[in-house]
Image 1 (cartoon, rainbow, N blue to C red):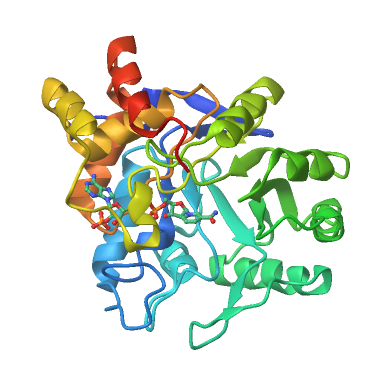
Image 2 (cartoon, rainbow, N blue to C red):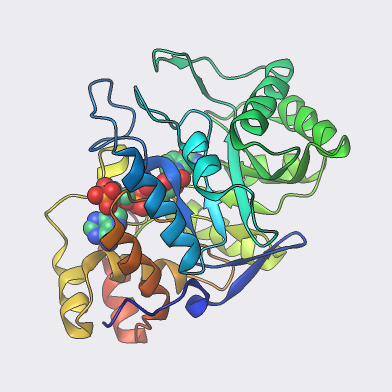
Length: 303
Ligand SMILES: NC(=O)c1ccc[n+]([C@@H]2O[C@H](COP(=O)([O-])OP(=O)(O)OC[C@H]3O[C@@H](n4cnc5c(N)ncnc54)[C@H](OP(=O)(O)O)[C@@H]3O)[C@@H](O)[C@H]2O)c1
């Protein structure tokens, strides 16, 4: 594929509430270190390179950036990089962040935020991003416990004007229904890729589409590599489709993701400027129904 001139608008747009975003966005988790995310001994990224990636993303039409205050390495913070690279922010830019988990100054994970602590996490994001409100805040969940109290606390912050729209992450259909009884949900951010699908996740993706809710997969490229990142060893089916299009395996994974439905948004994460250009260009790659079936065979029934 000729990639340099392809804009993030190539894959079309979706509405997050009243906010319009291009379906190819950007995930900020890979900006702060080389190698695996959250590894205590990781090498902090080059600051200028990370800032250049963010600015180039926006130049290429990316207007949906996913972040979190807990995306940091010893010397870099994703939110600080976004602020330095992109403020003052354009009205078109939508920054989505997530609360729930937290990390202490040394990087150790903290227990999940209580309803009272969620306000502090929202304010931390506001300070770091340099904003007076957050466009979209996802409540990131671990486990199956009720989310009513925590989602209710975020709904109050939304009413107070600190948050424009709410989403959920790492959830089940039951969580979604529970949250929707409290406040509108504009997006669901769950792990979903060619190699990490199961009947429940397929069903949740479909159900989000029926309700006009964005489904935003993470690890679409990394797949089974998860936080460790993409692996060299790619599946034969992905390689075959990539060869047929003169595309990279990462582009095929993103194109497959986007063809899961018009409400599916991609947020590929990279600290590499060449990968960024490639990922944005994947929005123009269209796979045939035969190719989609070939790729579907990779992960059907897997978790
Ligand atoms: N809600 C949640 O619980 C949750 C969890 C995880 C992530 N997220 C969000 O989702 C975003 C996406 O997840 P992710 O960043 O882990 O995974 P990803 O986009 O699936 O893959 C990132 C990995 O693939 C590599 N990569 C990216 N583009 C590539 C390309 N064109 N060719 C080859 N390798 C490429 C990256 O390394 P390079 O840097 O070397 O390109 C990195 O190793 C994150 O950035 C974060 O914002 C949310």
